[in-house]
Length: 506
Image (cartoon, rainbow, N blue to C red; front, side, top):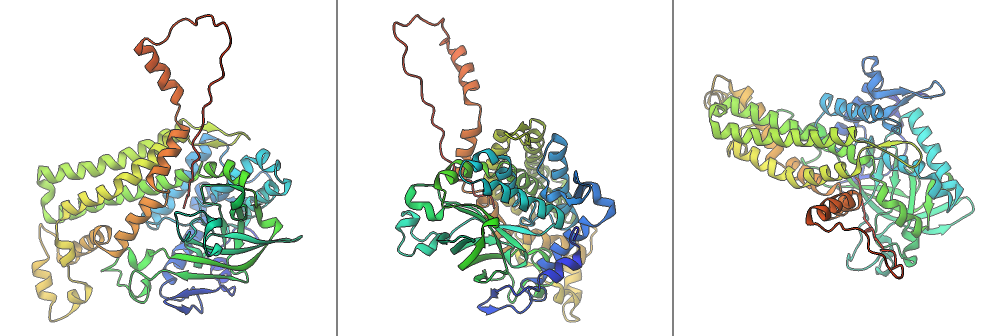
């Protein structure tokens, strides 16, 4: 088939999928007002893939001569890591810097499964082959693969096998000669307009009693038994009903978060990465984010750049950019942007080799960057609020600007510092969308939890940090290094336990 085009993508969504918005079945996701703007946004990403001017960033030539999507190329060198960063940056700058889910990071768990084929083969030789086959198909066709991470969970003080309703965590309910049957649900972003979802195991306690929940597979989102319940739209009736002047982000980029329900969904064995393997889930789960966090940091960098730009625009339009305390606050936003860039580039420059010879970002640096971004985004939004003041919550909309009854007043009282009212209002509405709208609230929540709660990120950093090097330095400076004393009997070897880390990349 070759790389998917815009038209291929639009046509592919007419596939009988079951999507519900506001309690009603959606007839066509391409035209529904809650979904159409993001369908168009994803179509624009396919345009970038097929733009000859961006071929070196968005695509690559495989060893067999076929042109593949760079989304799905497992990095084999530092240059590959840099190209992935440039690819994601291109999308964020060309389309929207606040987008989060469009497929480049969700595939990275497959990179890990292919990389750890030695581990998977210990349990079933089909698993690694299935992962490699899916990676090959994604490269060739450039399907939009989202993920499925978070289960409803129910009573979170109880294990999945202890729940009154076992369906609150996605599980295998039947194993057949030709595949498995899946039941349960996963929360996910972008599923109504994606092709497939990579379902990951996300519980932390992989005891034998939780074996049915130890599942990783790829689900066709139009498969029988799959239905998707969308959260309430951020704008009444859907983003397509929002005025782009008043809602520059909501109107085009309301990424739809969804509960994907699996009502006894059949998954053929060729789409199963592993099933009913709690030991494997425990061993592999902490590694699934090796490359995903690079995409997260790249997104954080784009958001930080937009915060700086919005602060500069609004303060310039109001004349406050001349005031030293305002410049000081803008400088804090600039520092935030450059700190993220430093984490991203340092992890890339100090990259590491994987067991199979792939190349991944430095894990400790990358994990530190994740924590920094999760902890600081809300603070940076607050700084932007302080820079722009209270005016964003008192703005007239485009209808007021165009109305004969109100236009003169709007043009008079919302102009200033050499800028007319429409110019100042456009910038201020963008600032409102970043600080004081439903879109802003959802973005801050996503930023905080998409990379798992901060304590889990801290555990990941603890596990990947070179602790022994730091301890050796401290021992030397404390004078604890002494020549070894002869021992009459050898003592027991010290045991170093690594914490189990649940990493729920988006």
